[in-house]
Length: 282
Image (cartoon, rainbow, N blue to C red):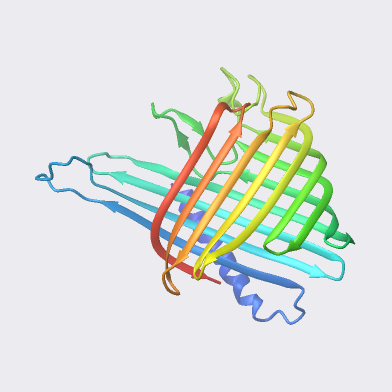
């Protein structure tokens, strides 16, 4: 837990320093913007409450940072995402992890014609803290699993809020620590192995729009088909983030993520987080 807190402090320091550099950027080649949110949820019941319920408190930290480059026919879009959340139920001595994501997306493109670009993309995803199952058994930790995707393709980009990247030759690498595969496969990595390599096709889409004043919805979709093993089973990762601004510093956020990866589990994984908290843009 201490490592996670130190990592968050270090990342926040870097982002703050980077934000200060934006004001000094006179070349206008880089466009940088970010958002830090602290969301809180609480439920409390006294002993006379007849409707039932258990008092609990939860908190979530989220960082969403874009740093994009554009010069002539070349564009280079980068997005860094960090999310971490904990909850504590009254009477329970342990805290439970409600969110844990560390992700970097990078997309380079050189204009071909109109809104089309020759492209090269890179995606990295992992988590920062230990994950436990319902029996308190360790099933994951930092860099285990870790996912890498990269490959050339074609990018269609209308503007900064709408783009689709097609990569017909995309590589995917999954890394898991050996102690998770000693007895059985884990996250698609075979028993006794520490990694799994896939080669296939990828489609990544991004769309952000305003529903009304102070309400924006950000959508990210990634589809991946592995040519080497059951290409008809397409991996799906969809993320939606809704930000409802109350004022400059307060907002309500809704985050929804749906994942389908039959190598990990043959079912749709769904995560949803709602909270009211402090929101700071930089």
